[in-house]
Image (cartoon, rainbow, N blue to C red; front, top):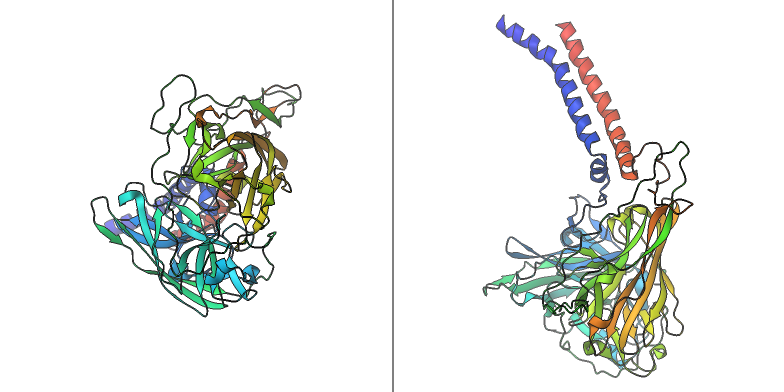
Length: 596
């Protein structure tokens, strides 16, 4: 009798339990629909930064093999996990710097990067006659092909002696030679070779670099890399060797969109050893306070809040609401410390704030990215960046005299500045490309920003004031954005104020951000170089100029933002099948109770 009563109680309790579960799930989903959306789509909600190590995430486990044939790939990425060095890979797949396992990944080097080998003596190390077809992954970004490099930005500063490690190509098998080398004003610099024994590459922590990867015959290649370092206490660390599979040839046959000129007339002899590799400095840059009579300190400027949300005054509710539109608003640069930087990795680009765009500098010097106002930096190019352009190779736009240059790859004592469209707010909010426009250059000389082809000729001309250079470039966005580095060449020493705009489509409307980068080139006090142009941002304004809250086109009556509505859509999609399931379970429980 007791048993029967107990069973009846359990049966009657099931509908109540189902109702409780339903209520709980409803509460969880509706409490934070934006989070539910992010978890279901993989997007990063705005304001969720900072993220760790270039937004690095572990790729989901998959039974099938991953094939990468285009985009940004840090082929050899080094991590420090549990006190051990680990070599893996990173790629901008659905998110920036998604970690991948080389054992289950194939890199496809398509025929889009096939080109004739140069005949210049400086490239004799390739081991093929001039004009022979070879495949070269370029050192500079090109759409729709691989852009391969190496990365130590996931290793914390101070974890390794000297903040440095060695990368070694242990072995390479395949139908032809593999040669990895850097392009520069002085000709090619060899890094890894399958034919000649080169010393291990000394890489600073943190470093992010790209190079040319040449394969002299089509087919399948297998490269084995290994990392080694020493702890601050003197204990040696060596990673497990890791093998990468690359298939060369086939696929897209469209050549890279690069304007190529003749290779430089460099007469460097063939060598079987790599020239000394200059690795990025591991010392922190000197911070200079603004010229207010305060002393200079060796500590870096305090980090500013990461992409603060612009505070706007909502328009008062009226019976017939006035239209609130995004409007360019000029403001003075924020007061505070200006940091003079002479080393490290930086990217300049747009960020969506509110209903418009804002320009930010992404600072990667500490491993985890920090977004700061461009007016808080002066980029200092001292005589470490001074070089002479090669003659007779299409570089006439630089003149015959010395130039000060940010190179294509990260170098010691030179800030490595690029641009990108990879902020999560941009990849999730912008439709189409971003247009980056050089509005104005104030300074004693000309500016030219360009790429190089794999054999030293001038590649893409991105923007500049030198003869033959455009004033704007299109930067794709896509699923994970684009990250680009070019050579920045200044033709005279002194201070420069370089003003850019970023523009694109947000919620069907064109939005624009305007800001100025400050450079100090050559000798002198870089603290005296300050941005002279104001910052222009987007804010909501009515027709008569009053401040208002911009309505993202769809939500005037609900008061919800786009992420909330998208979250509710996901919640609805989840709750419909959940409702069917719970209804079925409830009906089944009721039927079983009736049968008894």
